[in-house]
Length: 274
Ligand code: ADP
Image (cartoon, rainbow, N blue to C red; front, side, top):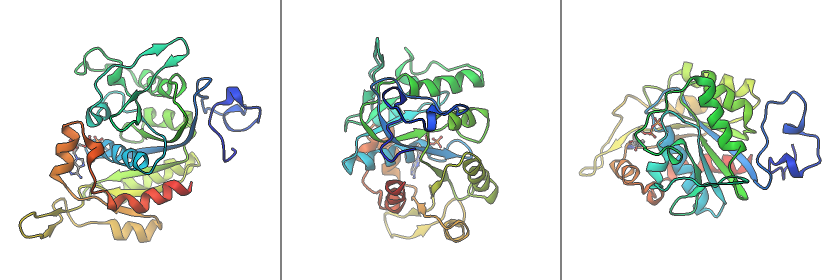
């Protein structure tokens, strides 16, 4: 695939990637353009995958990149709430228009299409994966430098078919200390390896808590395994603290205002290198 690939095969004559026979990678709508796609994955729900996805997107936007988030967690969409996006997505003849977050991040999520946010999506796996892939193929993504995809948790059928359909440049694995066990990390690494997608780094979320009164650092969910994993897999492991400010901003739809993201800087540098 060329360096300058925008994943829009309708305007490209090179016979590579999505154009190749047998490739399951889907093309974008005519006129849409996305340069790099990064998937954010986790072994299970509730570890902070969506929060990490939102923070990486907010960092990307602050660094001046045109940024998008695709919420592929169709049955548990939480990105619109974190970004405070509550208007519904509009469609045109040419496709669906992404809804902009307060800082201008282009977003698409099942919750932007449902009439009621509280409506459950009671679909079988193939439909769920189909909807997530349509967010790639049918949305008019506008000149995006970095797209962050909030994947459904786990390594089952649904994440697998999304993996196969999107031209991922890399994945970021989010875990918590008790969840950061070899098996989960290695499953994610193996899946990425089979798909030929590099793992750009691990995030050990809720890694510790710093007492606001005395500054004492406590590893509430057990001893960090970040050092061990960094050595074993030779990739950056970002340790994110449990931070009530992050939880409060996410709840208030203001996650873009969270500034304590130094722990994610080294990981972001990896993202910029792919
Ligand atoms: P997942 O996408 O893995 O299911 P979420 O990103 O939705 O998890 O996070 C679950 C909850 O935990 C959310 O309310 C989120 O705001 C909160 N949360 C995530 N990371 C942190 C953190 N480091 N400190 C405090 N709260 C967090």
